[in-house]
Length: 366
Image (tube, helix red, strand yellow):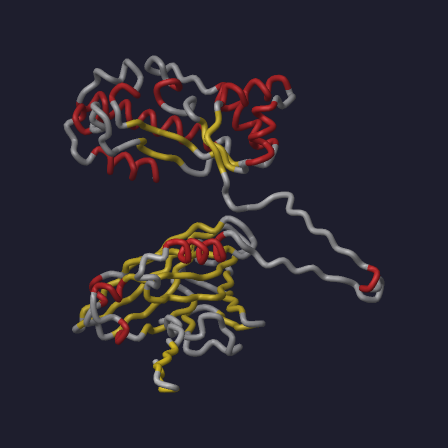
């Protein structure tokens, strides 16, 4: 702040806020060199301000960098915004990890995991709370694990910054996420030998986008359009406005298995087939429902191991069946928080196992 006196009054100018420092050095590789990154059991090359990692031999092969420990003095310093861009010619799972050394003790922590399923740049933004073991540590090293171990990867725009907007400016935070998650650069190349730019008028219309924008649909209505091979107004609206869908009801346990062993999937199968014909993705909702009354009638009076067997049979059949239809992921247990007069602890109450929900999540993931 600067102050001065003119004709008896004081004016002040408030300096703009300082930019939040990036704890990662050369994260955008603008120096056209690798330093201060190092590379372990791989070939790391910076070309056109992008880091290319090839010749990898293990999941941990690749870049790493020491983060200044002076930046972590209290719990608030552990709250950070993490951002990076990644690309690979094949499907990969990328895990960012930190190796923390304190008083001759070394621990390893996974701070971020992402599956990359496209061969284009994937921009990632996430708010993280780093492990408290970092406070008072002697060394913190950030590195990347990628499986499969032999996959080539490219990285750019890596940043790890203390959380901003302590004043609760949610709108600015949302706009920052939009910039990272929903926007992509478009490059248009012209053959200047063949055209005169003065004679060119360009009109660009976006026909589709890859950002998931979805809705819940009545699969009975969609199945009718599939059978008729013609879209009514309902199907037209879904077709023209959304690229991800969930079934409101027919993929849940109660309608799918009205009696034990009697599985009904025809309507949901047709809905998915219709969605795929328009290159839309269907995600699974839901494997289980925590309220007793929202389970099949034959399930509601099961207890102990009988209920556990029914639960795991349901998860196993459903995930495997819809794998054939490329359903990428599932809501595992719907509405686990109590609301209204009926509690949402049916599976714990009837199995007598307080950890049943955790076990189901792990089983579904396997």
